[in-house]
Image (cartoon, rainbow, N blue to C red; front, side, top):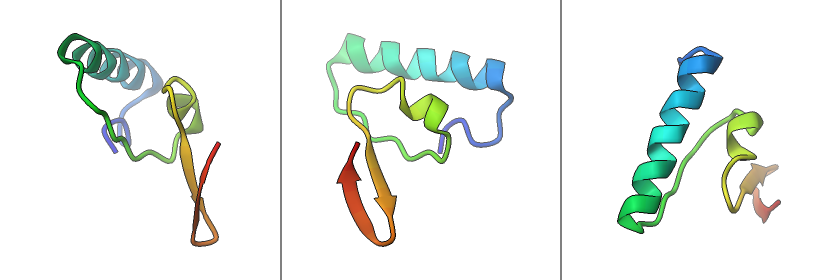
Length: 56
């Protein structure tokens, strides 16, 4: 959870850096977060709810 203990500004900056690295190196990115605001900025979102993994 790369942005878990960061304030909103630093969480956004960290996510921006992570996404730039992901794009520049054409790699897969798997991120775990409880922050849906952060998750909504990603291409594909899976949610684990009641023991079930579902694409959102």
